[in-house]
Image (cartoon, rainbow, N blue to C red; front, top):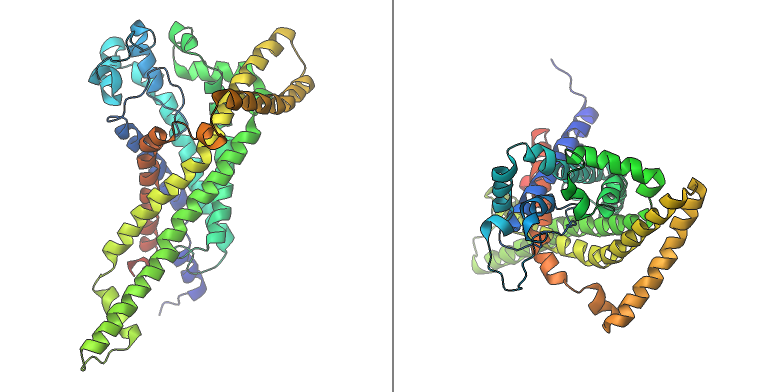
Length: 397
């Protein structure tokens, strides 16, 4: 006779292992990055733009090289017709390979692609690990996590991503099109390492305060919104439908003798709510993505201004060979300088704060919500599959 430790078995049924959490994180981050590039096939993007909401637009640099003979990709007229080989991600990549050979992919495309995937891996893995930690030994946290726990786990995940992304943000905030096109470095790997050495540790985390606020708060809302709609709102809707159908059957059929629990079990066994569950996953993903960008977009606009001014401070301080202590004081005072500059820009724009902060948001949302939504859907699918494999069958409800 084989003796089974019930407590150990329960733990195995409800907790994702560290290895599985990493696997889910990699899958979610990779699909999110891939989906972002697919959405750019139907949205034209300025070739010289270096920042995208998936952290880094890893096709922007490719566009710079492909379109460098057209004044960094901009035509002299504003009515230039759409060109597949110069405007779409796939077309630009094909043009780059034709022009520079296959070496262009590992040297210029893979570094920013790796940066996006790495930050996404940190985000999703730290979220799953934190959620598991906050829930302790609860047996239902995979199928019905507390909104408070998902908010806390999302806050921690956003914090970890902001730390992991600090070097990446520092590189791209201090990079110009001319530097990338001069060919001083044979690939972006060397370019990135040289930039980090040039900026230094204090420069990497200069402006980190804004990044921390943006990432931690936005991803706390992102994950808690997704989990709440996917779980609590779905269950409320499902239970309401079950009650409606149950009492309808009870009134219309005199021979109906099932209890409500028996009727609910019958519907679940028939798989009546699988489509409803899937629909709520997509609704939750879209809503969470919209909430994420509503929080991140205005902060990112201020952060971009702040990083541009930090670049000017860096050039000034490098010429004076300032000490590390002096640099920290300068970076601290730069926040005050940035806010004064933001106030100046907003006043001169003659727009309200809401109009100025969310100017261009619609296009931004159209290009980014599909990728962030799919990232959440893949996260849920992989997490559910792994949970089922280790014995958690409650998701089938």
